[in-house]
Structure formats: C-alpha cells, structure tokens
Image 1 (tube, rainbow, N blue to C red):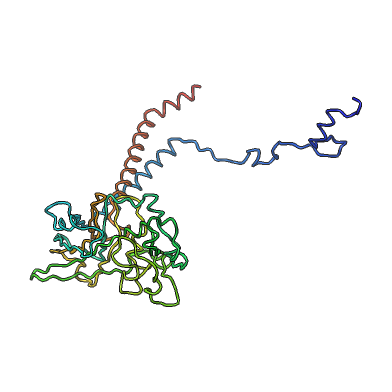
Image 2 (tube, rainbow, N blue to C red):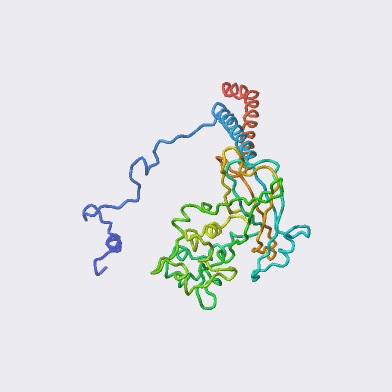
Length: 369
C-alpha cells in the first residue's frame, strides 16, 4: 500500500494490545489463580447414610411430640368465651339494632345479651371485639392513611396526604385523622355486668389503658404540639371523619388518652392480615388473690350498637379470654408440633425396618463387586 500502514497495525493501535516491544502488557480474561476464584475452597459434602438419617428422624420425633403436647395442653387450659351479638337472627336481642341502625343515626341503639360462665376466669381477663368478613388487608384500604399526620406533624394536619382520598377533606376542611382506616373506626361500646344471686347487677371494671403497643403509643402516634396545649384549639380548622359521631379531640375525657394517642384508635389503626380478626378492647384486672377475676355465674353484656356490619355481611362478637406464657388460645401450634413429630417418628421406624431388612444385602453386593 502507498501509505505503508497495514491493517494489522491498525487493529493493534485501536485495541491497545501491543507486543512486548511496544511496552504494553497483554490483557487476559483468565481469573486469578486463587482458591476462591478457581473454586478450590474446602466444602462439606454430606453423605446421607442410615447412621445419620435415622437418629435425626427419631430425635425430631422425640422432641416435637412432647413440645406439641405441652403447647396443646397449655392452650386448652386457657379460658375463652365468645358472644356473637351481630343481631341478624330475629331471636337475637340486638336484632332491632342491626336492622334499623345506620352511620348517620344520632341516637344510639342499646341491647343486652345474657350469658353464664360455667367455670371461673382466673388471673387477668382480656376483652376483645371480633369482626368477620372485614378485609382490612385490602391494598387500597391499607394505604389510606397519613402516618406523618398521626405522628403530630402540623403541616400534615392541614394538608393530609393524597393517599387518604376520598377521606382527605370534608366541606373544604382537612380530615383528622384522614383515610379509610380511621373513617371505619370500630365504635361499639361494651359494658359487662355480673348478676348477683340476690338479683343486683354489679358492673365489671374495664381498664382502657395499656391495650395498645408501647411503640405505637409513644413513638408512632403523637398529638400535634401548638401554641396552645388545648386539643380543641390545636385541631381547630379540621373536620372529623365522615362516619364519626364526634371529633378526634373528644374521644376521651382523659387528656392522656385523647386525640391521636387514644388507644382505641391506635389499636384499630394496626390493620389485620385476615378478614376474621379480633382486637383488644379492654382488660379486666385481677383485684383479689383469693377470688377469681370473673366467678362462675350469670352475666349481662350491654352493647351500645354504633357499628353496622350489614353492608358487608359481617359479624360482630365479644371475646373474653385469659392468656398464658404462649399468648392466647391457639391449639394449631400444638397440633402442628405433634403432627410433624409423629410423621418423623413414623418415617424413622419405616426406614429402620427397611435398613434392617435390606441393608446387609446391599453391603454383600458391594463386596462381590
């Protein structure tokens, strides 16, 4: 060629890979000669034999079965009573309330349900309210809240998050607390009475403090702090949720349990994962070391019926329960342990029989080969 410039030289110039005379090192894509990059690290390759598998099955079986029996017996020792007061049946004392009540009613409907305890409830007794067919796990429902507002942020109080739509504003005013979760707050009032044999009714003291998680009460939920410590003045210019009967600063007369730090509100705002759930309502504390918390006998549950469930075909119930070191009544955990332990023990016996019957045959076959 006239220019004296070859294609080989051009390729070498652009790639930058010159020979030893050019002074540049030749690049290589070969991994470094190390134990990690060459995959020479020591590794454990277990060989499953009868001497290792059979003891594992028997150990798991012998451990899980006693644990499961202990969990199951402990769960059965927990006292629990459920009272359904939905009122869909015509024979129910709350039938009239369930048929006539709506969100816009200003006069509450009151009904009473009588029941009896065959066995006393010892220690502290926890009162729950339960709902069925209520899907708090719906994605749009779960997102419909403003955590910054619930944490006491003044800017979010006046300008709630758009996630709260369509429960963000009402009549041009920001809703506090905003969102579908707060708007659907459970607001039935439950009162429990013990019927003395002499015919008098004694009201059971229900403790409403201490039902929420400590982190929720003291970290996640806070009242806004303004120039005035009066909650009425702080929440001035806001609107109550559409389905509420009173604003958030009138939820309780106790200033330590009012506004965004109201424990009933806090418990409700922690959404449930399943459509049938229960939430802690009150605590019945044990006052005497000699007498049970709830003695056997007749009781009356008086309900201020404020929460309609007919629109979504739901059901409401009140639950009385004691607890143990493992929590509330949960027989499934004990049954699961017993089932897994029994299966492992059964498989261990089957494999032991197979090994005893055919193990010597395989060993002799290996020797002949």
